[in-house]
Every structure is written in C-alpha cells, then in structure tokens.
Image 1 (cartoon, rainbow, N blue to C red):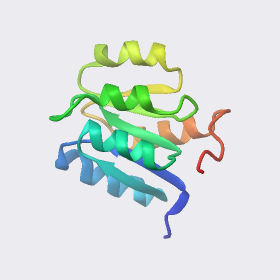
Image 2 (image 1 turned 90 degrees about the vertical axis):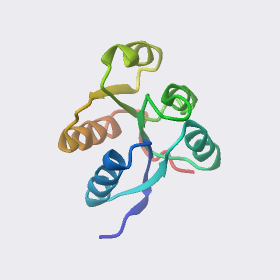
Image 3 (image 1 turned 135 degrees about the vertical axis):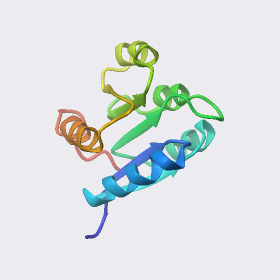
Length: 128
C-alpha cells in the first residue's frame, strides 16, 4: 500500500512506546506520517510543509504540545491526546477544529475521529 502525500499527518509524541504503534496504525490506514519528539521539532515541521492533520501530545519532555496546537493552521484538524482532559478544554474552545482523545487511547477511535474531522468542510485538499 502506497502512502499518499495528500494524506500527510504530523505526529508530535515523545514516548516511543506510544509513537511507534500510532505511526504504524496510521500508515495501515494509508496516511503518510512525519514524526516529531519535541515541540520545537513539531513547530519546525509545520513551518516546512503542509499537513492534512496533526496528532499532538500536550505533555512533552521538551516543550509543550500546546505551542504546536496553537501554531497549526486554523483549517487543519488537530487531535490532542492527553491523560489530563482539563489541559485540552481551553484549546478545544480556542481552536474549533481540535478534538481530544484521552489516554489510554484507542487507535481505532483515533483514526475514526481523524477521518471524521477530515470529512468536515474546510479540510479538503490542504496540502501545498
């Protein structure tokens, strides 16, 4: 199965035991995935290229995923995954195209939510 550059997703997660299965699962669903382990790497990736969506952990060892969420283009869906739902409530209000998936999370639920968000108006053909 070839991953389409039209389905490029940014994953910002510093825990390799979470990141690896997430990347594999997204790739199984025909997404191309770029990963970042720090907020700075995530911000740099956003500056360099367009993504159709981002999956961001708020609590990173280096930096805050919040910075990445706020920096994403407003038309791009963002899924926050966190074990602390109160951390994402403000971001979900601030940025309407943002949803929370609580840890421990379901890979199936995450991909279903991502596909649903990509089907919403304003998220079509976002790559440059």
